[in-house]
Every structure is written in C-alpha cells, then in structure tokens.
Image (tube, rainbow over all chains, first blue to last red; front, top):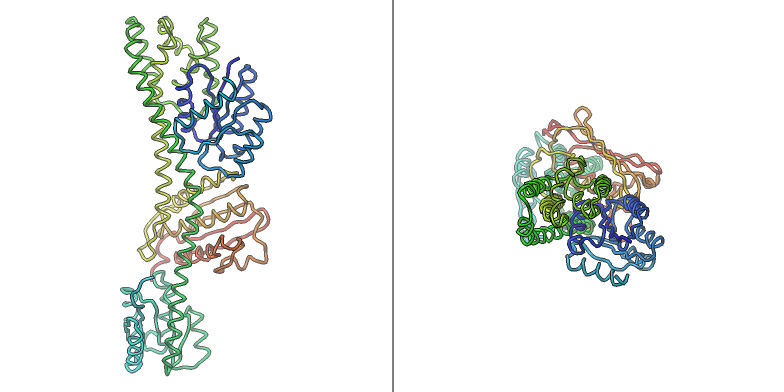
Length: 132
Length: 458
C-alpha cells in the first residue's frame, strides 16, 4: 500500500519548501501532498483514500483562516488513529497545543522557523512510532 | 522627563506686571520668556514652544481670548497648557477662558504662592498626560509584538528550508549530471536540455489543486503507455512544470524514457526546477518579511511637531492590516471597499495609530470572529474612512463615554482607556471628525479628514 505525508499551511512558500525538503530526504518511498487550507486537506485525504493511499503523517500549521490546526488534527486523529500528527507553527496558543496533545495524540510541536534537522528527525521518529 | 528647567511664556502688556512675574518665576527656577503683544506671543510660541503660557486677558489689538483660540486650533500648539491672568475677578471671563481651552486662571494682583502652586500643578499634569500617551503607545505596540513574531517566523522558516533545498539540489546535480550526460545519445541530450529549459520556467504557486489534477492525468497517461514508473515521473514533472498540454510534455520527455534509468534522468533535469522554485520562494518570503518590518518601522516612528506630508490613507490602512494579519486570520473575513482617492496632507504615523486602534478594537469586539469592513471614499472636500465590525455593539449607556480619557471596558491592566481619546485627538489635529453608530451585530466608526490643505490655513 502506498503511503503519503500531508502538509497543511496557508503559506504557499512554506508548503512548497516543505514538500521539497521532505521529498529530498525520503525520496520515492512516499507520496507528498500539500494543502493550503483544512478544507483542501480533507479533499486530498478523500482522494487518497479512494486511491487506497494511506496517510501516515500529517504536518499542520496552527493559525490558518477558517479551521485551526488543533481542530483539524483532532478530527484526523478520530478518523485515522494511526496517523502521526505534527504541528509546525509560528504561533500557537498553549491551550490549543495541549488539547491537540491529549485529543489528537500530537507527536510533536515544531516552532517556526524550523530547522531541517529538527523537522526531518521528528518525521523519522514518527516513522519509528509507526514501526516503519 | 528631562532635567532642564520648564519654560514659561508670560504674555502681558503692562511692564510692572511683567517685572513681578519674571522675578517670581526666575527665582523659582523656571526659564522665562516675555511677549508684550498677541502677535509677538504667537511668533515666540511658534519658534520656541514653552511648557506653559501665562496669558493676560486684557490687551490691545489681540486679547487673551483670541490668542488662546488661535493656539487651541493649531495642532502644533494646542497641547500647551494656558493659564489666564486677569485683574477682572469676573466669573464670566473665567468661564469663557476655560471654555476656549485654558486649563486654569489666576487673578491679579497676583498672590505669589498660589500662582506658583497652580503653575506647578499644571506642569506636572501635562507631564503625566504625555507619559500616559506614551505608555498607551507602548501598550499598543506590545499587543502587536506577538503577532509580528508569527508573521516574521513564517517567511524565515520558508527561507531556511528553501536554502537547504537549493543547496541539496545543486549538490545532487553536480554528482548526477556527468553520469546522466554520459548515458545520453545526442538526440536524448537535446531532449534533456530542452526539459531543463522547460522546468526553469517560473511556475504559478498556490494552485495545488490544479497541480494535483495535472499529476493524476499525467500518471494515467504515462501508465496507459505502459511506462512502469508513471507515478514517480508524474510527481516529478507536475512539481517541476506548470500544468500544461499532456501531449507536448510526453513528446518532450519521450526520448528520455528510452534512457537506461528514466526516473534518474528526469529527476536530474527536475533539480533545476527546485533551484528555480526555491529561489522564487525566498524572494516572496523576503518581500513578506520586509513588509512587516516596514509596517513596524512606520508604526514606531513618531514626529508630532513635524510638517504635514502628503500621503495615502489607504496605504496606511493596508500597513496596519499587515501587522494585524495574524489576528485577522483567526476567523475574520475582511471586506474592503477602497475607492481611488488622492493623497491627503496628514501625519501618516499618527493616522496609522488611528487605524490601528480602530481595527484592534473591532477585532477584539468581535472576539476574533466576524466580518471586518473597511471602506475608503472621497466626498467633496473630505475623505471618509469607515471601519465596521459585526461584534455585539457598544451598549447605549456607555456610548457617550467612549472617547473620554481613561474610559475602558477592558480588565484592569489591559488598557489605559486612552486609545480612543488619543484617536480623537489625532483626528482633531487633522481638522477631521470621528463618529460612530452601533447596534448589536453592527458597529461602524467613520473618520472624516480634509482631502486638501484648505482646512489647515491659519
């Protein structure tokens, strides 16, 4: 079964650089999908499910127009309890992080600006959690 | 506050009065200047604004009331406290003086101790007032800082990631290019460099949905032709090339599919797209960061007594919105209706403080969720800026008080209650007006400003 990593951020420059950064490290083993809003993220999740692709990691910003990252990750966790959730954000309220930790089993919180090492080692530790 | 002595201007036409006052004030440590007529007083004040003015009422040509009226309508001088002096122990005159903006009066013959006490009180009050205004400005700035951190951290994150992507792509190219080129026939070489040219074309950003469709059709089309690596090739090409005609892309890469390792060949060409895309990323992110820094700099710079300059009101509003972007994103829909208007004579930094206060109040009133409406239009000689929110409205019983200094609805310590009072002061300095209408679900502040400098002629 094909596996995918999904990034959600309302800033296109962040999305594009993230996808390349992650893709560059993990190569053709996974699919990399990006979404500019939670709404778009759900569309992708649906499409991938239809194509029988398993989403193993979701990396989401917190502060976005419309639905916030904590709400989104909690909903993802309810539907896909195995999926590793990571928050990557420049500002998040502590309550939101705590809620995501409890209700979405948040794997990690990474503050922007992130470093490549931090991001990639967090994803790798996510793989370990999934026994990949 | 400075340690320099406070300066006091004595305006009086009678030499004995002047002598008494100058002696009293100098001995008490003040720096004293004297004007013997209204005209003379206005000239001195214009050149060296004093900390306080002692103003005689009864003078030939221009009387004290007229001088005071002029001082209070001039933005440069309206904040200097004026204390009237008059031999007339007349309630009507006292009231009239206070009504046109004096802070106090002393009656002649002057009782030294009382006069000194009153002067000291008003100098102290003036200093406290200036300090509070300054504190309010700092508090407003403090509220912005958290948001600004986010606004700056995001582009910095994108820049760092883009740099590491470019470095990695170049590294890979250096290793792979000789290998790839060795394997290519001359026809394949031509196709390879055509593909390199193609991926180096700028690619529109943000149309991810379109990119996904493009990837899917590319994958299906390549798979239909029996190409084993359809999925990986489609992913590589859709990220490197703007969505375009499938046939021409397939024709372009066809010779490369005949190479020993098509994915390796295409990926080597696609590395040039990574350099291109990430350079563009850096450029966009730097522009965003610069915009925030610019906004902050304009916000912090204050030049209260400078000349008015011609500036765009709309630009000022946009700068403030840029600073508040992060608060607005939480759930506020922005509706902007900007009509084209000409630049107006103004103190742009001060107006920015007005927009910042009104927008921040609107955001807080809506508790970060609702519609923020901003309209800018010109009506005859005035421009009008309207800032509307869909918050719960201002309760009728406090509507009359909101512009009063120290009136606040915020918990102790979160606001000095000076925000709107400073807003009104700034607008009055611009010879403008502010009013509002408010009901539950709909509050709108309207600011009227002169569109040209006719209103400023003295």
